[in-house]
Length: 291
Image (cartoon, rainbow, N blue to C red; front, side, top):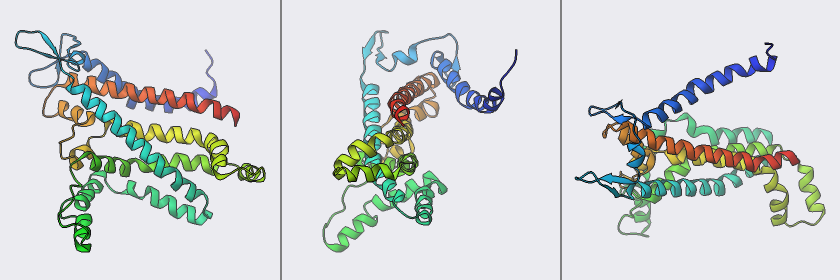
């Protein structure tokens, strides 16, 4: 059997994906079909109890009672991830457009500022938001100093604070892919649209948006996937009052010691990410073909 050179070039990437992505996901999938051990971990025999636990709770007589609690946690996690993605797109697209319109030297500076949060630990950045949003934080102290309010606003430990933390954390993942597509946009197309008397709205809707859609789709996936499984921001900025699926998974592997249920939840999150990736692939293909 004769192997092509491209096979050997792709082999390291395939090996890395298999070892660090495929094997952990297969282990997680296998754990989700095992039985929770009394002292933590998993044991035999195989069972689907972890998936049944998502919808039902066992009564004292062994009968199953429908419990929508976990469904509501998943729904809350999904809509917070969707809102995070929408807000990141609404903020990230103008930011990427502004950076592209600058001189090359200024672009480097602005891109460095966009990636600057990556240089600092996420835990430290999240704690900084606590210092800003708490009752005696910068915002409430400033508003009281100006006389606008006399009592501190409840800015912390609610869904708004979680949303703010998620958008702040994952916004660079939206800006960078959109910037990459905008940078490759041919300016002659924009000039041609102006020559044809296109308005700004028509220019954006018929020229800019279709050509930047692959970058937008990549940014949507890169923001939605980690936002769906995030647990640091909900725990710290939500104060544990707003339980999300990421926090629920973390609890199953630590305090609750129910590894099969945690693995089942992780499998659901993975499936959601796979669906998002498939959607991104279907959305980007036609545009790439036209380009």
